[in-house]
Image (cartoon, rainbow, N blue to C red; front, side, top):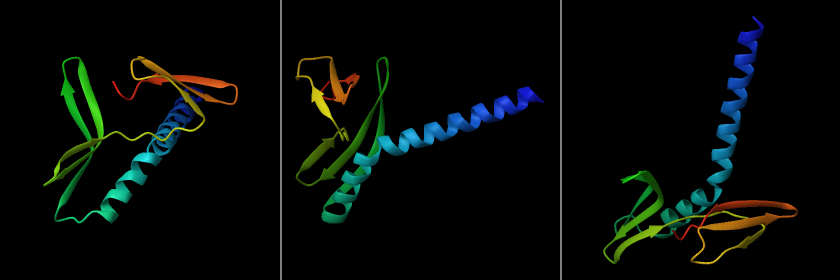
Length: 109
């Protein structure tokens, strides 16, 4: 019985953490999506969101693809706070919030 309770607690925590993380990570994507859909005429612009494309060693995800008569625009959205350190040639960038440092993949790669 204790094992079943432990599994239920772990599963609930995992699901809540996963939902909360995806909710927080997508704040910037939702803001850009809303901005694009409310300010661009539907007849002239078509918006695709969260497009997954297979690549040689897995897949990659594109936040927004805007298709129009003027061209195709690929938009990567980031919603970071704190200080961001990195340059175009770095593999990783560093986010610093107070005393906490986190590295993430350079969004330009």
